[in-house]
Image (cartoon, rainbow, N blue to C red; front, top):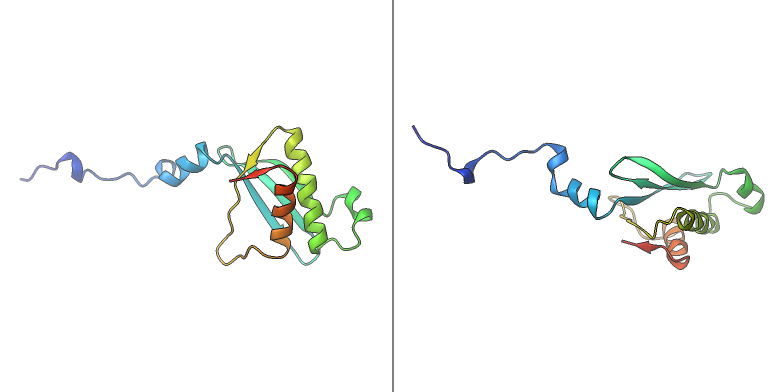
Length: 125
């Protein structure tokens, strides 16, 4: 009968122990999520260890409907970025993580939203 050494011990593949979970949990706790429909632009910042939404902004809000002539264009995305940055400063969150999903390009509405966040003083990781 062969003995198993420590180097051949089974590896735990449970989701809580994966390296990516540890990186996201401790180094990038706040993640920027964006959604663009044909009518509206919305963005939220999620606290990834607790999976809760910390701050959200959308072009569906009553205060913005009168200001924006079109709620789904690049100008609306830039305005949502500015509002999100103001709300992040009120909550004292200096930086958020931002990753493009598979197949997404840094172009158009995404670029406008992220650039307005960056210009308003929010660091992007």
